[in-house]
Length: 405
Image 1 (spheres, rainbow, N blue to C red):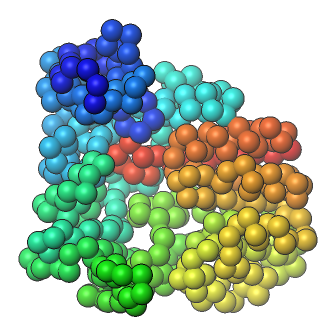
Image 2: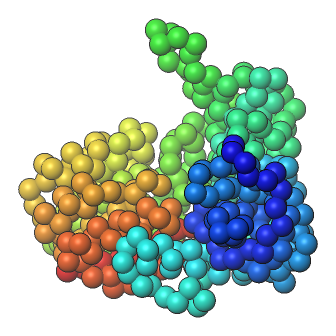
């Protein structure tokens, strides 16, 4: 760090992407964590990025009316990084998330979604702000204890009482010693069964054999149900973390796709094929659905769950390569890329393929906004955007846009 003061008293401004709020000290921007707009706080500067600083709140001098005692017992500046917005009312957090997405869409996507003062994320289902998560990964420390990471730290918090998790999900996992450096994958499936799978630790040398994956409790695959269909998904593979998210998103995709019999749909970054299932129902046996993902485990789950739908093809490959080899144009493409977004090359390929209708899902506001901007450069119009509070108690958000040309 340079000559910045160790502590500052700041009046906090609007929310920024990533869970901080913006303040200023002698003209310099300070991104302050664990603060709300309008508050006066004492904050400790934790990093110097030259033109701006990062700081964390150590005392709230004048609190916001939206501040509440933390809804997560282990989160906060001295605790775990799990629930970084647990100190605000759920309604306030949804307003902050909406404002962030509106700002990012304007700045990075050139699209004005809604007035930031009026924007808000929608709740997902009726589970509420706590107990919504059905999958989680723990890491293990040198002493063999499992825990959650502190914010941007390798240090672990070994109290497992995170408020995102339903009661009993992590019971007894803190009573045994685990191999240092291992990962614990825990899933609570739709039959109410708990599955615990250990992966790692990583081998000490490149020539060592790949670390074994071991089932500690339950099975390697967890049962998940959406729309009357059953999936068996590896505990180590991707599935929506929020218990209601897969249902809510698949219903939205089914309505927005506007497909009919005989049409073609692409399900890109398709995971276990949840969206492919609703797309296949819409196009029927005379249509075609192609679902693409790089994960072999997800592809196996998709092939098994969709085995009765002969017009669905499951492709295990990168989306970029898959799009480069497709010959039949899709009537609609659904994309659910990782946090980094789809990016220019994939959007360029979709536009070059002449796909007239795109449903794009993003779990990081800035990446989502950049992708929206790339579509707009190719002449796509944004018909609608919806923002979901799919990760309550955190700054994370899920965005969905329908684009057409």
